Image (cartoon, each protein chain N blue to C red):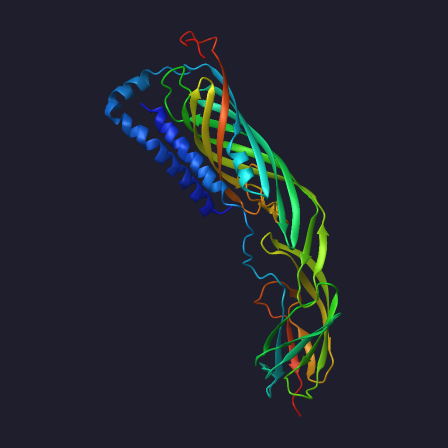
Amino acid sequence: MSTTAIYRYIFALSLSLLCLGAPPVFAQSDTATNAEEKTSDRPKNIAGHQLTIGFDIAAPVRNYLTNNRYSYELEANYYHKNEYYWVAEGGWGGSEVNFNDLKYNTTNYFGRLGFNKSILYRESTHDWDMMFIGMRAALSNVNRGDATYTVIDSVWGNQPGVSAGKNFVAGWLEITTGMRVELTKGLLAGWNLRGKFLLNGKSFKDLAPINIAGFGRGDKNANFDFNLYLSYAIRWSRKNNPTTPKNN
Amino acid sequence: MIRKHSYMQCLFLAVLTSLLLSSCTQERQPCITPKYASLLLKTVRLNATSSVVDTPMPAAVFGAITDSGTKGIIFPRSANFSLSLSPVSDSCKWIFAPDTTAGTLTDTITFKYNRQLEFISNACGYTYFYGLNSATSTNRNIDSIIITNTSVTNNVNNSHLQVYIRPQP
């Protein structure tokens, strides 16, 4: 993974945050003094518990528009405290290489664990809208079937062959940013923008998957990705917080 | 205060971006690295001071002796030539003549080698690299052959053979 690639993704994520975060910040500037006072008085952990389960609704669209790969993704996150959310994500997918001189299929499952940190102040116990940054650690089990190939040689003749299938483990780290907004009671939508950095790229030196679900192109050490989630939230109050009003 | 309609605008833009990104179907990338391993040879002579000097051939003819007949290549005046080794067996033969003039004597060069299958990339597919074991020839035009590099890969900067041309009578 090159340093330039890391800087590029960090820059893109920072820019994304600036672009999306700037209008609300400017809107608050006329009440800055009041906001600071309120911030200092703002009680922590005013919100109750929340568990959300979501589905990446952009994935089926991508699957429909591309004919050589597919993927599906689910996410679950749990509000811990101090605007930190524990996140577990998972999914599956596959890809097909079908060129004249090279044909093989790959399938994989993946899982990610990490956290999101909301960077917006909570207006009330009912306010679950958020913009966040986060990190993930991910693992995937990749299965590649037998690959058939032909070494094309116009002088000596073509030489066909088969490369036996193989299992790989892929590990990567992600930095992410995104937002969630509550469309209606308990139903949230939002997106994630992700920079992904493969930790064991050398494993894919031979016949890299054209696409690893959850990561992207297997022949690149860094990928940039986007998810659009539709989620459902289950909420309950904190027993030990008398200031917490009844939630949804 | 942060307005929800701002969120919704962002969401709409995000959906649009997603669809635009998704509409870029993944085609095969162009193969930008040399795909084939080339055997690079140089024709040379010893001069009066026993130094090795490049000796350009006026119009050298090389012909690959394949199962389906001889496939010839005529090179313009040069001392550097690029040939291929057969990926279907561990030896191959080329005929060589220094020019195209009728009646020019030809030599047969025999190469023996090990093949090694190499995956270059999804864009380029597979190819063979070779480990050169020997290069022998008849001696009508060729005096001897020296292997200077046994590793025949897609690196086009390495020369593998020096072909010593017999002095003209």
